[in-house]
Length: 110
Length: 117
Image (cartoon, rainbow over all chains, first blue to last red):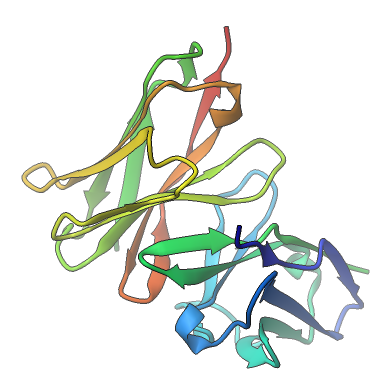
């Protein structure tokens, strides 16, 4: 069974830089995995941040950027702000019309 | 601006059928892919399945035997049916829009469905 892996939790200082990753338990992530990233604060619907590896959604600040780092997809937040404290989810395309979400990363800004 | 408005029964008994509908306001079903995502309380997101605007469905293998996603083009609506529900199907269900290589660009507001005897 294919599992999408994310760090369960990370922390960053205000103004700092943090990278969240999204990998596969077997195999590598590439642009053909069409990785996307979503941000969710408690009680809210998620918000789409990044699609197709590195395309920011409308209205998303440019401190959020997506990339492939090694064999994983990555979401980098540069100049973290207090309201970036959220849960972040990635999703990968496995082929055959199938998508799988990662378990999410809880980001703390402190 | 596209707005996805969803509704359906919020409380079901085990073995009943979950039925949710999503109305697409401010846009058309055409040219887009329509998915349902669910999130159990306190847990992460799970892709339930997708239907492309021309009617081709794809489902999460773990749910495939129980799920149907369909389009009603004249009404501009997307529907989710999940049969034989159990407590494990308790979740907030989100209707979402996407397109080629992009799973989600718009999210619905979510509907909490609770399965309890």
